[in-house]
Image 1 (cartoon, helix red, strand yellow):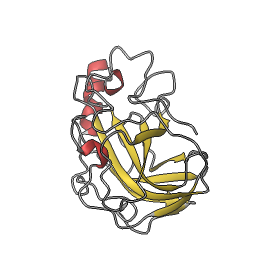
Image 2 (image 1 turned 60 degrees about the vertical axis):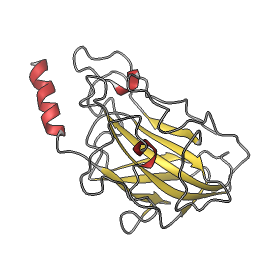
Image 3 (image 1 turned 45 degrees about the vertical axis):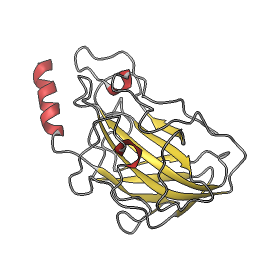
Image 4 (image 1 turned 30 degrees about the vertical axis):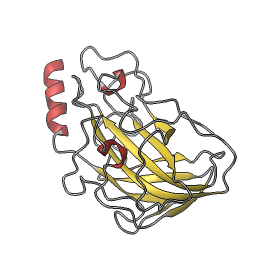
Amino acid sequence: MQFWTSMLLLAAGAEAHYQFPRLIVNGVTDAADWQTVRQTKNYQTNSGVTSVTSPDMRCYQMRPGSKTATVAAGTELGFVASSAVTHFGPVQFYMARVPDSADINTWEPAGNVWFKAASITAVPPMGSGEATWPAYNKKSVSFTIPKNVPSGKYLVRVESIALHQAQSVGGAQMYLSCAQIEVTGGGSGTPGPLVAFPGAYQATDPGLRWSYYPIPTSYTAPGPAVWSG
């Protein structure tokens, strides 16, 4: 029974890929795709990134940005999932400060520039359903901009780590995109630790693996600790 359950889950997930093409700011959703979010390479295929050593781990970017959303520190920022987060696993949010001298539309976030701002991860007891994974099957995901993050322009990277085929190394799929925002009313915090993409994850990280049988007794998402601000 366990074998057939796993096979059905894998088959059902084969076509159920997704993107994050729109922001939700102050409860208002972007009017069209890829406005404040940089267009990703999977805008037609919906496929995820499978190599953690690929530069696509930064923003999976196909085209530069064109617009920037204004978001107050301490308020909620959301991403629309098209059509929903249809694979189980954690959803994480990273932010990278754009240098004052750089153009946010074209800035490349290479090197140790990313800090983890939030993580929607597993809730015990462990399983592969919505009871364990709060973001699973949601049509949007959101987090709160840390209230002490300094004001300025940032890229915000949303990342859904799909674990449905992660029984072996390299099986996890990352669905991600980067939005362009300007934070106002920020504080004087020092976000960190700062990490790089690629580089923050290793293919062998336990958080990039999943077992249907036996079911794990715990789960820790990959990457650094969340900076709460």
